[in-house]
Length: 307
Image (cartoon, rainbow, N blue to C red; front, side, top):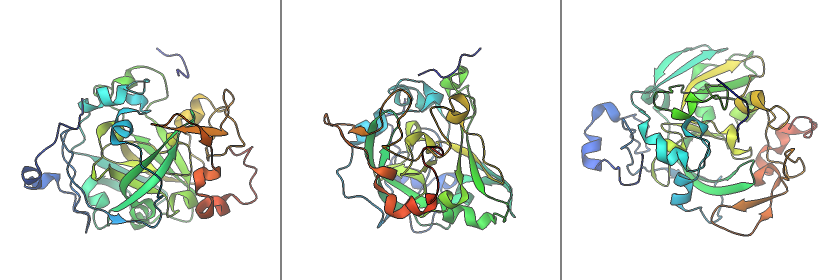
């Protein structure tokens, strides 16, 4: 779907674990997680994560579907384009800029950003605005644990995120289908909610490029486009930050984007969804089924107005 007019990684590309672990520059040092992130697309290795009480017990979507059916417009608008084109992305070295309303701004190596945190495995439902959903075993770190060390000040009301902009490797950025770089944002309480994680892997392996390597946000009670991929900048802001889809089509994509079966997209119903790999449709759950953990954050808000 084009919003405005404007001017190969495979599972066979695997670095042997023994060789991989001898490459000092590839180590991130995430405590207790057995995590290592490699340069380039040949980075799939086994990871260990502590089990999480937040996981669903629903049947997981197949790995082939999770890695082969994606929305990632930086690599093309078709669902198969990311798996076909994302292998060109170089993911090491990788730095993250932290700025805005915080005590410790700076540009940090990915390993330094992640170091000292325990990786967790969380099996989350992911619901996309187009009416399809998946159940994915993510490996990641609670976002709150990553953000607190930078000392967000009392002025920090929101957290803004920015994706890498590198059209030489991200061929979808050569077309003006969205405003580049891709941007997203959360209210501070949403960012600090225990459900929100920064994922660095799935299915027990490092995150594939087409799924947002080397790290991407996962916010399971919101529509999938809120879970921004390949993050290079995190900013603490006093005002609500602009976001990619809201800028391109504000009537269709609100800032909050909570899964809500009672608020339809202007061009289709959100009342039901189809799990990838299944034929039947199922009722869409309010907050994607995570209401017990998140509904209190929106008490008193008009969720039709703040959609």
